[in-house]
Length: 241
View (cartoon, rainbow, N blue to C red):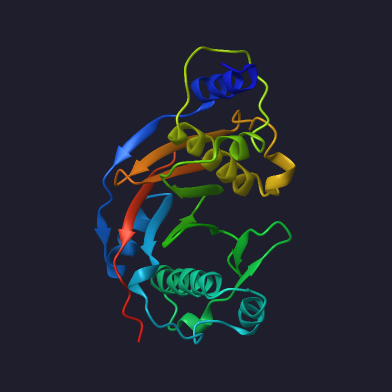
């Protein structure tokens, strides 16, 4: 086995956190306030295919300016779906009367914030037709990837990891776990992917978990150190019209 691939495998064995096989329960919008009282982090899996036609009524002027910069209908749709769902959830959590009372913005590293609500931590990740949305009372980073085959050489060139060697072989799933953990760590630390992708994440002050959701989605979540309760659920379709 090539020494570099061996070092990647060693990283998988030593640095990856617990993987949990999980079947995701569905939750209606009305039940979210109860979940919020019981948990520190709420994570929702959202199927974009549930939303065929989308208007921009939920977007403010800054958000509409951003969507005009997006090049494809796919990127526009996932932006609208994620903001629409986020605002409807927050309406229930913050006792707002309308989604138009909630505004989002991004900082220079791309982290999403809620205007006038610094106590909330937001993180969003996409993979094909799936949106994962985290709303948290603590600092959080998430990433999701649909399990699939990878072009190994193209993947390895982005995973410059230096560790001692091992004879264990690595699968596509193993590399996807590394990728999602690195992406989640970038969002958690609010750093660009390019600045951290080639380094081994420092988990000394963080808690991390990796999940296989519905035997289909590889998902990683990172929070700051401490004992935090995390709820992962599939959000039922919102009838917003």
